[in-house]
Length: 339
Image (cartoon, rainbow, N blue to C red; front, side):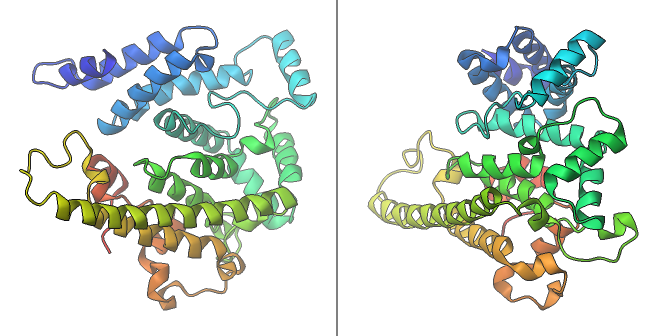
């Protein structure tokens, strides 16, 4: 119903998708603990997908942003805030609409939530101060987080595992290989992992900050899992490209209207799958290249397989789109995935 409502609103003389998306988001998020209700999450996931397609994600993000701040105690009385602090000090993870490390079932919703939490991490200056502690004082991530809380005088900060670099990493691991958002989720991770923060603190452009977040054995293991997952996803798309080529030969006699009926284009193009194979192998190289972390790499001199152009965009905090996943994915991120 909500998707039909959004579609109708986008027609000439309609109220526009923004108003409808905001209406449905408020209706769904008005319930207590709505993010723990499977049916509500299902509807919210479809709503977030529509918001992405119509480039209206801010309608939902603004609502979630306010609720997120409330959940962290920004607008509650001192008694409730004290209880919340005690609850977190006792070892509980700070609240999030995406509970656990990731959500493999409602990926559109997770995409919206993590983007919202990323805005909060930037607005609160938490990311800037944590990175500064890692770069200037060589702190461990947990120490950097505590120092950031003291420096910014925040009553509550997200738990260590709620930092967005870890959140995007886990969501990238959990997202199905054929989901259209997966390449963008990996880019979100690399925007943080390959960030070079030196100039922000009056230091020369040096290595990327990523490995400073992945020093503990658990986080080293996480990086290993991520590399393995990238290889698995590349293998998936390689197999899919072969299967579709065989299928296209078998279906050569069918009419165009019969081919791929009801199946999105991004699942029916062998060329797309081949492009994604190359992309995910590029990501493998970016993840395991230690010279990026040390700062002794001249990007234009890298071999072709590193895709220096897109690497430079990521290191300059710019995402690139994927024109084969639809116009929204391509235009909103300002690029394409053509090799």
